Length: 141
Image (tube, rainbow, N blue to C red):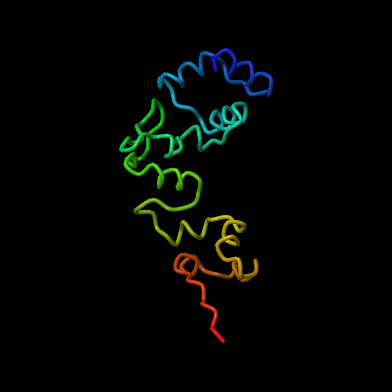
């Protein structure tokens, strides 16, 4: 899709990103703001994560993610799947504190992880309990 067409789509949806700014973002001369990424994802009918980190399965075997102009991968180019899962809020990266990461996950995500627990029971769990939770096995009769 051309830069002109993307600019038209942005204008149609009320996002005020000038064509010259888009060109500078594309070449890495300037970085995209969070708002730029959201607007671009919206008009391109994709998710912000898809603009920031490509799908791991689009890479050739043995190929690693590369830093794109304006996008740094925090030194995680070796682990595209893990990096993408982190961007999507599905897992933490290496040295992040598991307790704090788990504590900030949205309740609907936690309810998917703990389908047998009520929302109130999940809300009362501490971050450490969430991070180390192992479901009880049903006793055989």
